Image (cartoon, rainbow, N blue to C red):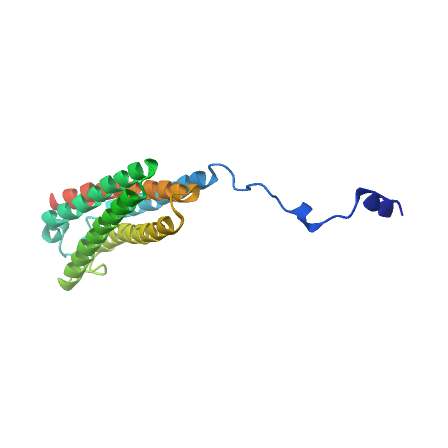
Amino acid sequence: MSNTHTATAAGPRTSESFYLKEEHHPENGTMLGFWLYLMSDCLLFAMLFAAYGVLGRNYAAGPSGADLFDLKLVAINTAFLLLSSITYGFAMLSMYSKKMGKTLFWLGITGVFGLAFLSLEIYEFIHLIHEGAGPQRSAFLTSFFALVGTHGLHVTFGTIWLVTLMFQLKKHGLTYENKRRMNCLSLFWHFLDVVWIGVFTFVYLMGTLV
């Protein structure tokens, strides 16, 4: 009986009292989560580099990196990816200047460089497989395809993300959410550049010296 009187005195309870009306997204929560993701990606690539370091000299009487790698082609591919990092930086500067047109332009150029990088990487893989140097040929080639292919998949996902972000920017403009997404993609894209520098040095350059 007393519980009934208490509820009546307090007035009728509505369903609205169970919902938050203010912004429930924690401040900087997305960036913290994305940094944690990048650290997990660092562990993934560290394991792939370690596997290549262990297996990279096991040729099984097959071709080595010195026999297979075309450094000129890889250097061009490296230039494409490094230039894409620069153009993404220009896109970020345009975003902070609130210039939508230039932001979309530089994002588009970044996407073109990303696609050019992927095209050359796919060409390299097809050429190696055609020459009989597929991932099943030796432990060296298995670890090579695993490391370089995983990086290529990341660039593919990053390019898809970039195109999706361009559509979001065109539809909604330079909102707070879109700026946050651009910052996350910036971290991801530059992270891939750093990983590729390691691949270029550790796999290609050192591989051709053997």
